[in-house]
Amino acid sequence: MEVTQPKDLQEDFVLAKRRHAELVRQKRIFNARNRIIGGDTTAWDAQVCDQNIKAATEKAREEAFAAEMRQNDKIACITENRERRDRKNLCKAINDFQQSFQRPEMRREFDLSDPLALKKDRPARQSDHDAWNTISGMQKFMGEDLNFHLRKKFQEEQNREWSLQQQKERMIGRENQKCAEDLYLKTRLQFDETAKHLQNLETATRKAVCATVKEFNKKQALESAEKKIQERKQEQEDNLAEISNMLRGDLLSENPQQAASSFGPHRVVPDRWKGMSQEQLEEIRLVQKQQVQEKLEEERQRDMDWDRQRIQKAHATLLFERQQQRLQRGLRRALDCSNLSLAREQLLQKKHMKELCTNHATEDYFTQFNTGSR
Image 1: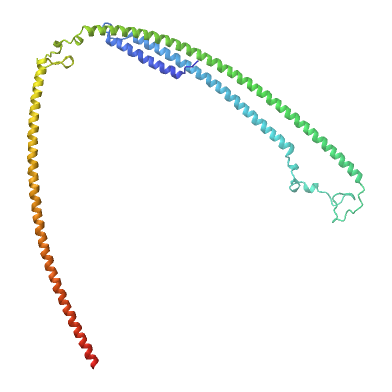
Image 2: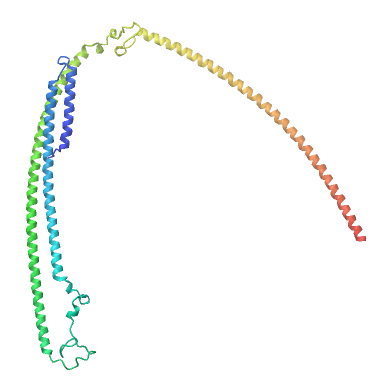
């Protein structure tokens, strides 16, 4: 089943309110028999009803939001408590581990920074069987180990005590781990029960909201169906009245007298005019034929003018071309005469230059000959 949201309800309510207001306005304006001047009690009652419906819808919406907020707050509190408890347990476990296995005196290099190192230090020699007597100290020699059996027994006893201590510590660790697991399982079951209870509350709240919305939708559907039936009935009555008026009116009967204007016999009412008479149509056709003849005569005269202008233009162009040809021939003759005179001058200049060269060569020859004879 599809659940209607509060936003959809609000939109449907606004649309229904607008439709109802428009219907009321149309009935008040177009119904001349029931039109009054003053307060509209029906409209006021409808507005009061709409306001009550809107207030109920807003109240249901606010209650749903409040339930959802309460549920979210509970879930947030449970989650925060769980995180705080887990963080506290983790810090406690870290501190216990540090106190048990990470004490300062258990470090490998503690003897280098021990403040009581001098008090704990042993003298150079306590007895002949002192283990701190080295070879360089000349305090103990080979073959002088008289407490071998006692030392071996002491070492075995010490190993046994260490083994027992390790077993005891391992059993204590297992018991602590088991207790922690039991506590975690118990806490987890408690959280699951709380979450299940909250989920049941949410389901019940959602069902109540859905039932309220469903009932409201059903009422709205019944009201909408009743309004549609009334509107359809009113529309059918209006259509029948309109059809009757149209059949009995002058619009479909095409009465030509209805187009007569009060401003004169030569004017008509545009929205009632049904067309011209046969005499008016014949007169218009005759005028159109006259206009066609005048148009043809104008086109023929315009074509004759264009032909005359084209012939005159072609004649002028031919005369211009002939004049250009005569000018070009005159220019070509002048250019030929100029070229001929230039060629003659160049020929005379070459002859003159050749004579000058010959005279210079003869003078040079005689000069050399005279120089050689001397």
